[in-house]
Length: 152
Image (cartoon, rainbow, N blue to C red; front, top):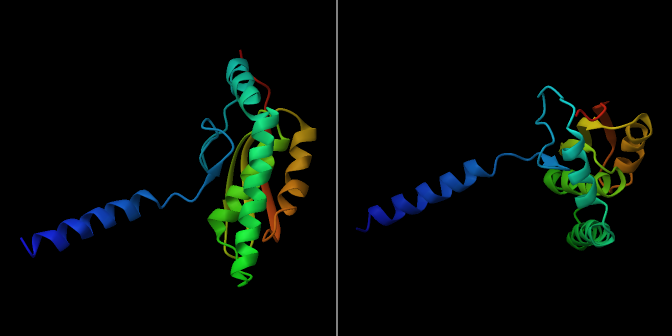
């Protein structure tokens, strides 16, 4: 029994660690994974995403989340940003300001943020880089997103 317990605990920890390896932040459950072919969402999917992300309560939640993460980083005072936090903050910023966007955000320790997926017009596409750069820790933004019209 004494040898079985550490074995079981290590198995659980290993399983948990492998389940947490996906450090990609998405603005919507339907956002494509990096490298996945971008397919235009249906008008119903676009409307559902828009309604979910555009409420005033949701916008306040997203802004509060961004402020809390930035305060936590400042309190640590090490100047280094966790890439997952940066990706999450960029996701929140884009979700609050680009309605209906289906975007996937990846970040590196060096502050490189890659945004892929789709938006519904060129104006939204042009907002991605400046909005992402508003987040502390973002040094460079690569926009791999494309404009697609809703299908259906």
